[in-house]
Image 1 (cartoon, one colour):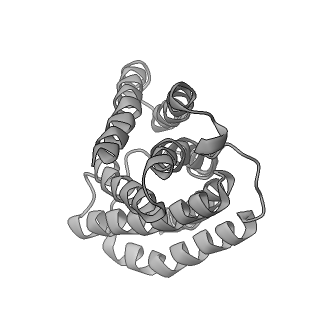
Image 2 (image 1 turned 90 degrees about the vertical axis):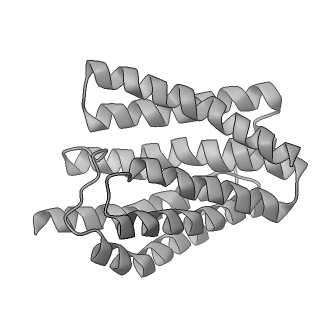
Amino acid sequence: MLELIMALALWLLVLIPSFIIAGEVSKKKDDPFTIGVATQASFFLLSVAVISLIGNLDEYGFRFNVMYVPKAFFVGLLLSTITAPIAYKLVQNYRPDFLPDTPFKIAILMLVLAPLGEETLYRGLIEGYLLCRTSFWVAIVFTAVIFGLVHILAFRDAPRGFRIFIVLDAFLMGLVAGYFRAFSGSLIPTYALHSAANLVGMIGWLRLEKK
């Protein structure tokens, strides 16, 4: 129990300053892309800083292992493709306010920055901490629960049905990403899976906006 409380404390230690930084950035430039860059960069840099203080980068997933990258990318595409039709039925006319205004910026944010920032925080810092101190599945499931629930903040203005779907979908993706992280010992497959899942979502948003 103490380990789970400590994991939550580490999460907040990164999450709160990141949101504060993003808030300050938004006061100077109220642009979704700039705010997204600030948020994800803060997630990544603060997570690495905390990991460096409490352990070593290697045991927290910063090791080179690309063996499972193709499989992780394929699984991310497959799962997101399966769940996408449900999302499209629930989304209605909603558009997240964090999406940038051009396809290029959306791609940079969703395919590169979000996977790097979020996976380093959740599968790197949080799951890495728990893998060192609890069991394989406790680390994966607990991290996935936090990852799923935090999406309520990003989609707080979404239709209720879509918001519930996003939380469950993020939880599912978190479980799979967590498994790849724990099994491979590396964050690289989780970056690939997250990027693949977001790719399907990005294509969906762009198609909806053309209608």
